[in-house]
Image 1 (tube, helix red, strand yellow):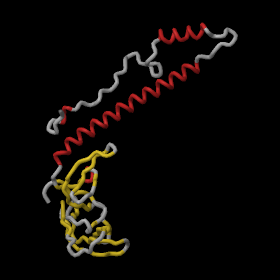
Image 2 (cartoon, one colour; image 1 turned 180 degrees about the vertical axis):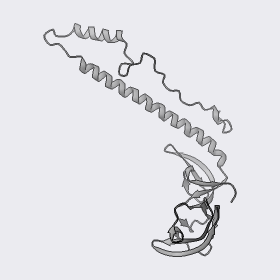
Image 3 (cartoon, helix red, strand yellow; image 1 turned 90 degrees about the horizontal axis):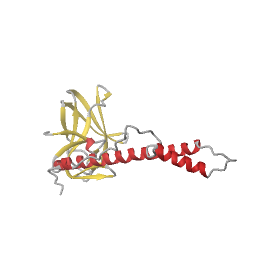
Image 4 (spheres, helix red, strand yellow; image 1 turned 120 degrees about the vertical axis):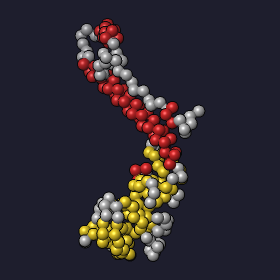
Length: 213
């Protein structure tokens, strides 16, 4: 029985090894086999209506080419499944831990803590919470390098867009995120997802910060 503590017991699929004398299109047919088919066809051929074997060779090449690519596709699908298993088992250790996940807007209906993540110190920043084109709330603050808590205590219930300005120029390199705990890990349609305590289902790629705040 496979244990979560021993994920590396899973073996990846082995690729099909092609022999040195492989020729695309006739990899399953030896020269002797082809000669037998050729001679048998000649044996029953009408001497007054000789056949062109080039069409037969073309069809054979197409069939073997399709088989060749199907073998590659099946191997890659198996490899993807193996990686998903490995990633899934590794992700089990993240259950119960807090992370900051990227967000496109602020949702005060679901609550939670929101943060601004910056790669540098920024002074005199204007943060605008938007309802469509209308400014619902505007904050003036200094942003330090790293995570910055966004105080939303006086914001009404709803979902709001966010725009961040400095000296009248909108900043695109300050990320909005929210903190939540991973409660379960799932693989859906071949992709890994985290279910969070707030009910969201997110990709691991949406994690923007790990560790203390």
